[in-house]
Length: 547
Image (cartoon, rainbow, N blue to C red; front, side, top):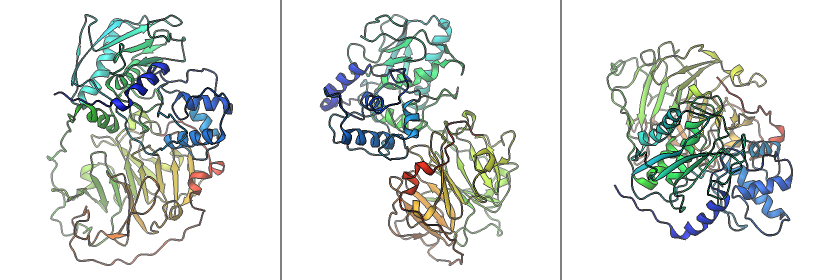
């Protein structure tokens, strides 16, 4: 399969930027001194593409504010355009040295939720690699195994295939170099604890795709020291043509968190690779062997006549709908065959009449062993199930204590979801919402109706769908839709009991509208955008592991 993807209009610019910045100086800013002053911050913003380089060393106020605002937007921080503690903390995190965006003027057009960025690939899907210079920190066998695993991560999820060669004549050459010595690219490594590695895009000649690593680092195949598999996987992404993504959990996310051994491609990484090399991702079909439970039982709730308890959106584009003791799975085409089934047959030990839940995706916020697991909430209790449907040990637990909500009066959750674009976690009470950003900072509570202007007060469920829109289902049978970019409503509320022709009908309901009487909750009023701007009033709980 041959794929050509030439973009000459930006290639000259990128070649200059890539060579001058040494593409990916992995995981820490090139200056080991902590960023503390405005001058430090502006240099950082220039290093990572948010502000243009210039001969004048003075800082233009408008340029600085604009660059800082875009940095805050890119990393889903509180957007203030000023040097907040949150912003400084993010700037001092370990990260890759490759620019996040490329700016050549003061006029920056920026999308808050920019996904993967793919420049140019190799034009073919079979590539070779070789280890040209081995590390003195690890055995040759360990180095070979680390890169085998890293390349296998891409091979398992995309159309790409890789072949190990042992003659030094390969597409991607891997080399470990001692610090403070030239190794042919004009930028020697600086020793332990700063620059870990760098890589080159396929079109950066003559080092096309090559990966260099600092051999003074404490490389390992575990979580002790610098995990070579994780570093290699990020670098390989650049070698294949991927730039940085601002999607938390993606391998190409600029910041590095050495928190998991089971490194794998995020859907965002896969989409980036597919944009360069074509669609080769295979999916595992859902099991059809489970015994159908309850589909013909007259006591099963009719979701077209009454509200549900909770809705969870999964990574594979399905909805899990919960009501009483039953579960339904649905797509945009309606309820899947063989449903409903009993909850007890799906998740042993899980209680009925649940309130909310979500599929865990944010590997920074949750612990490494929680990725893609299902979380269910009822009252103050939370259950967590693995993909094999087994209840994790030590569960159920108290959700308030685990999420540092003891200081708040969140007595009942009616909805929760993780933002697909940035990993932020939204927890909804009857009239309030808490926001946990990717760094583990708690924000809130805020009025739901002020964050999502026009949101309903009788929320039955809330989730984000594959179109990135956020959907509120009410106990009265209505659906409210909001854009994830700015939380503005999309059109008028619609009935799930009586979907119009052409509308998404997840539940496959008939055209007979059944009215349900509900009560409304009161809501406190805050100024619009208070949830974004009022960082000084937030309870900050800096990054740590939950669950």
